[in-house]
Image (cartoon, rainbow, N blue to C red; front, side, top):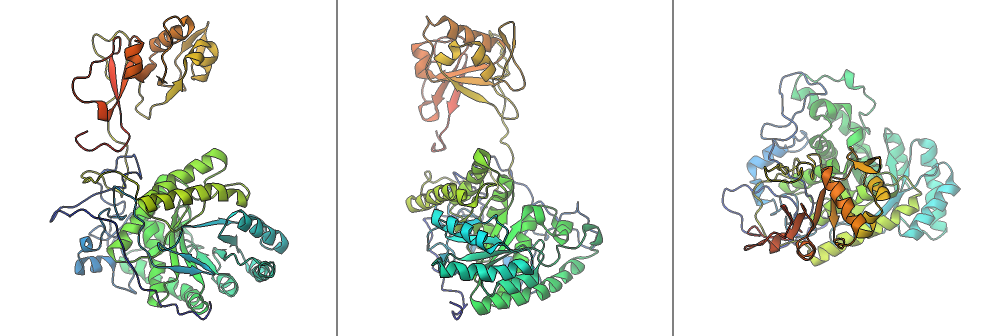
Length: 548
């Protein structure tokens, strides 16, 4: 492996079907199943202030809004001028399609005996939690992770003692018959990275602290763009020896940016924005490319899934513009434990996998490392199945959303009509509505049910509170003879809690002042509102065409 030629392999770019692009018409698109949030068309988070002092509050980009490049290669805005970016961009702008899942074509990166890239299955990985200096404990943990399904394992390497231990860890694992590729997690320590590159299969570097992370923010005040970009030479001086070492030995690399650990230098120019994350990664990638080293992947991690998704989509978009095809490592930093950690990872990683983005994933949980493999495997299988089946919806032309910025979709809350018998203004909430699915049996318990719904009780009567559900959803209507259940419905409506039920159920068993639910595809013609109902609710499943 160490003698392999590091010249990048030929790239086979096979894309899914694309719709014809209207001449001169800008397409602003999102993955059809990637996000339910409205994304408004806004200028990028950074705006260049050339010749002016920059502070943490200053956000800067090039004049045309594209990510600024370093001087070691043509700047991205120069490339954009020379090559129409629309000739390189896919239909989805940051993914192959905005209505179906097609895997983003990438080159192949080799990590030990594992291949990363679009021509290979998505790779699962995890990270040890044991003290790296404890060789026996770390070896045991790696083995446990490998047996649980981990195809790569990352180990933190803080200093030279840990680096020396890594030699023994790798040797012991090989003696036990485990060839699982090992990844060194490096922060603040270029010399340590050089040492561990002698024995590990991949090096993770954090651009936020590899070269200039020790500087204090207050020490950095750039008068001009030239001063800002001059420091790239210092970064190149520190980073180049590791690039050459990895190239010589066939060791892979991850340029792994963390939203929470951007360098003071980057913060001073971009703030803690996805644009700053992408430019930070590109600065290191250009140094790799300058030395014809291409065996690396990118990651754009954040503890907030929304920021993480924005950063990865922006990274993919900028790579499409300049025809880069490096694989992506997906993950939500410090997602947590239990349901919370798994949900955050599913939201962030899952959305990107359905975009067709991602070649290796880690579900970061504050639990034993081998426990990450079960949710990681489920997400891997989801992503592979989505790409294999090209899941999605019928083709449509996106006209209003911008993947670079997200906002809540503006909407009107229910208003009160003069003839409304009850107050309908509180059945939805401006900050996000909570609807609880309930059964007739639950309604009949009365006091326990009121407590579960988040109401306060006064002499057996429910009172609305800040934690009270805004509406309840009934799949089954209580029988007219069920006195307790129907009394609960009346009391909830009196405190402004909505009652939503399917139109068919309400037609069979009317409920006074209810909201009738109908599917969008059935909401055609002259629908008759059920007796007693006072509002319609329309349910969308995401597969409706524009007419529907």
